[in-house]
Image (cartoon, rainbow, N blue to C red):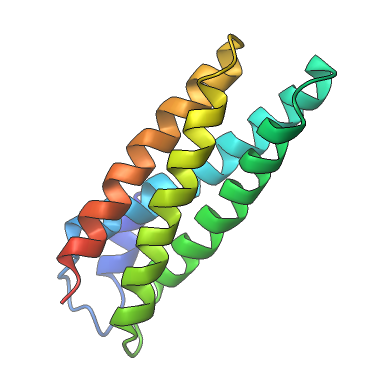
Length: 129
């Protein structure tokens, strides 16, 4: 099932979904889980991964919160949502930059999803009136 379809089923949306926001919610949910997995793998790598673990965990929490705000369709809070999307993009950029310093495949994948999430969050922030 698609999260975009779930959003479209909300009574106040009436079938209309802000596609950039739907994309950002989708990527933020996925990115949160990828960051958690990367942090766990970092723990198994041993010494020298402290900063990567921290940024992955921070990014996971920010992505999770952003997805929750983006899913809510009852009422409106566009300024907070826009700021949260922009903050999520920054958190993803920082996490990606740290992961890109490491040669581990899990870090490479984490950096990739973080870059995609950041782009979608920026597009979604720009789409909110």
